[in-house]
Length: 215
Image 1 (tube, helix red, strand yellow):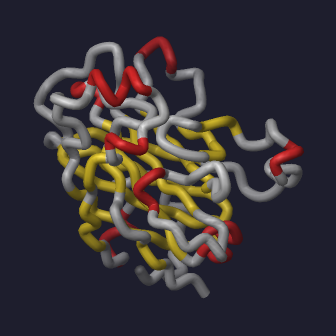
Image 2 (cartoon, rainbow, N blue to C red):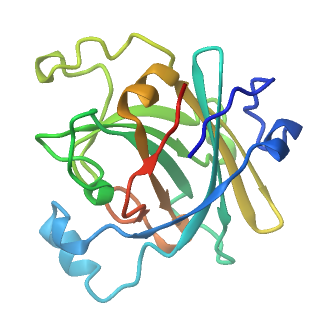
């Protein structure tokens, strides 16, 4: 995926800037049940469909040391209950040869920029968090584990996001540190359908890395 220089800080997914940036359809598949860390989750979801978002339109641009990733997908017609819609992009280490299906492993963690929709009472909370992911649902806030080699977690550009739901489709722009994306040279995509009670390791993920052509 080409990552062109864009003219504006296009955090707004409706910004005219995105009309000139090519997008790609990225297929998504359910995070494999057999890699779920929790036996209860494996049992409870064995006969339940999940990972219901089958594809997402992805576009990317760069400006001022930040990577902007625009994600767009069809929202479920069912209303959300306890769990909210969410999405994210994640980046491996440059020498990681594993697939993105598990959203990282203990030996090869990935950096996840995670967006989640918010209720009216949660509007004061940040929409985006930077997490270190070591497997399905095994997420921790970046910067909390110096012993794991994350001593520089608080350096660089912190992620941010703006979202809009219109015409039954979510459009979300997530922005973060361009240097991290350029070093990885690729990214994974994950989406959670809140109306289907998807969360943590139960969601839809890109089965292959999306290569990034970052200059």
